[in-house]
Each structure stands twice: as C-alpha cells, then as structure tokens.
Image 1 (cartoon, rainbow, N blue to C red):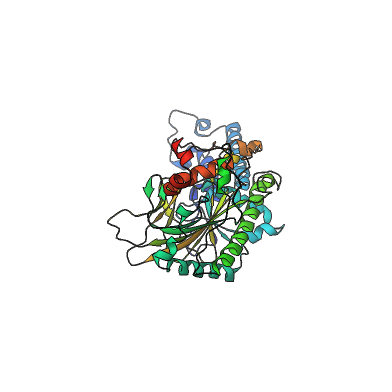
Image 2 (tube, rainbow, N blue to C red; image 1 turned 90 degrees about the horizontal axis):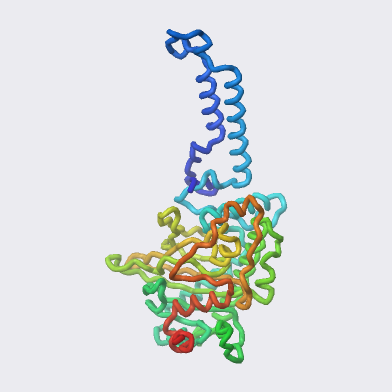
Length: 421
C-alpha cells in the first residue's frame, strides 16, 4: 500500500518521494542529459574511439525523451483516476466529508476519494454527516445509563429471551470466531411485529420482530429508534455515493433497500481488564452488511488490519468510523474491500463505550452483481474467500448465519431445528 497524505491531519506525513511527479521528471531529465554529454565533461577516457563514440546518437536521445514522456503522462492519467492512491499511509485512516457529496463542485473529488479509500483500505472517517449532535449525545447518555443498571434489571431484557436477537448480552456472551468477546452490549433492530409463521424455506424471517426495552429507562426507545433512523439515512446516502463512485446509476442499490434497509444497532461497553490475559474486546472479523458506522468515545481500541499491520482507528470527535461490509465487496466483485478489524480491551480501571450501526439490504433481497466499467473491472480482486465463513448472495441467509454463530444461546433456545440440522 502506498503512503496516504491527508490534509486534515495535524501532523501530515510527507508524500512518498517515489511518486512526487516533479521529482520523477527531474530524475529522468537528469539521466538523459548526463548520459548524452561529451565524454571529456564526464571525465571519461576517449582512448581507442572517435569523438562520436563518446556521445549517444541524436536519434537515441529523441527516443529516450519520447519514452520518458509516455511514462510521465501515463502516471499523470493514473493519478487523476486514483487521486489518493499515490500518497496512502498505513498509519492513518483517510477522512471524508459527506457534505462534499451534496455539492456539484466538490462531488467528483468526494467520489474519487471515496472510491480510493474503500478499495485500498475499506475504512475511513466520515464528517459532515448531518446527524443531530444533541440526539447523539442523548444516545450515548442513555447507553451509559443502561449499562449502569443492576445486572438483574439488564437480564430482564437479555437476548436469550428474543428469537429476533434483540436485547442485552452479558460479558463473554457473544463469540467471534469461536472465542468469547470481553464486552457487554444491547442490540436493537428495526421495530416491527413478529413474522406470523415459520417458513422452513425462509428461516431468516424469524429475525423480524419487536425489540426489548428496559422498564427502568422509558425514554430509551424513543431516543435510540430516532437515532437509528438518522444513521440509516447517512448509510443510504453513502450507498448512493458508492454507486456513482463505481460508475453505476445512483439508484443501483435502490431495489435492495426499497422496503426498508436492514437495521442493526449495538450499544457496547468494553470494561477494562488486566492485559496479562486475553486482550480480545471483540475478535478480528469482517462485517457482513453493506456499511457500518461506529461512534466512539475518547477511549481508543478499534484497530484495522492494513498490510498485515494493526492500525488504530483513533477516536476523532464529530466523526464516524465507516467500514465496508461483505455485501458491498460481493456486489463489486471485490473492487471494494471488507477489511478485518478488532477491538482491543482497554486497560484495567478504564472502559470504552461505542455504538456500531450495521446497515444491510432488506432480508428478502439478493446482492446485486454490478457490471463495472473496464478500468475498474481490471482492478477488481474478486470477493475474499474464507472457508470458515461462507458468504451467500441471499441477504437473509447471510444475516441469520452470522447471528446463529455469534449467539449460540439464542440459537439453541429458538433455532434448535436449524442447529440440529
């Protein structure tokens, strides 16, 4: 991966000299000029040869200049198509301002930056998102209040009660790749009525249903559902932007969210603990949907795997961390990148609070397979293959598979027919 130069950083890494185009041009010109100087100017011996032997023929000089210009202008064309790829640093995530997408003058630049960030890293910070700040602060405050409730009250709304995977999960109750995560959480999805009957051919319809809400916090339902709706609008705007960035019609994904995008919001608390044990807050994984928005408090912990290095997604006030899910990777034939990430447990005596919103296509949808233009199709890597986590183009099947794997207590209690099979 090439170093990334982000003008929004307080301490900006210098651009990589290899791709400083002025430097490239100067280097080639110097080589050509020196290589065609008279021998005596370079301290060469001309014994045994004529003066012409010490010079390159004029035709060769012209040929060198032509080749150099072809290389130079091909670099310029590639740089115009991939403006951020020449300066990408593995030490920082890029920052994009969603407000730039709303204005005609800045939209092309935003789409180019979005395409590069989503392909090369799969993660970025998002500012200018328009989510009401007061509502966000209310959501964070009510989350803290929930986790401060006595354990007995939290267990009254535990997820094991819900066949729809809604409610509270105590520390160690969720698994990532078979290992316990050191976090407690409260899961919310779209508020709806339960599906009236079980269809053996579409078992994922059992995910539809009501949320659980703690009796001690009657205002929690209003705050969280209002916030979830605003987060959904942000992801739908990003989805339209991704369609344009991939040279598709703006509504390329519309059919998959027309009846309501799949919503899944997690309120998460990571308690600190002694690092002598496991530091798995949540294990390394990829998200299964279209897009994820993460709101963090001031405590770091989220890390992204880039070029075999874990890079911290340091909390940045006023921003969301956005990452690409496996559905977008599938839809783009691997042009967009779903990236492994994890959360490291905070030190003992501290805690970390975050809220993660996962947006996917509606459960009865099938992932669209986009036909990319040739220049993008040539760079598509194909979706990643994980023998331990098979991917399906049927959205409901994918979502249910992930829920069953992560919450074996719910699976055993409400999906014994599928678990037994």
